[in-house]
Length: 170
Image (cartoon, rainbow, N blue to C red; front, side, top):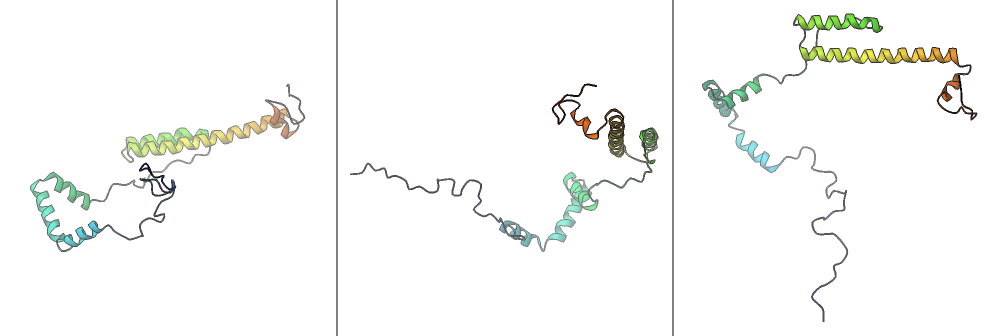
């Protein structure tokens, strides 16, 4: 006679019908397929949109803050970044950074640009400064290596053994 316990056949585990990492619906919902609740709500509101809009405007005019916010959000587009009409002096070297930053601060003080726009422009100038410093460092390093080492590949072993196994001691 049996104990009442039957061994379970290997297969899916309860609560995890799919293999880990594999979806039962790998492609997801079809494009354009909408929720049934959304479709039903849209059908109810289809004929009432003008009346609802009129009521929201009336409530906003009376002073209802929620209705006012709703109406203003629909009237005004969301605030996005604007194109800054600001002439930044050309930056060719590190010497041109001071005049560029002076132009940014003057435009900020004159109200031509906002503090946020000034910070963004200053960050661009700072990135340009780092690019100038990096290229200048690279140029100076090449000059030093050319003066100091006979072979261009010789500089690679300055902090360790050269390809031939010997250390360089200047």
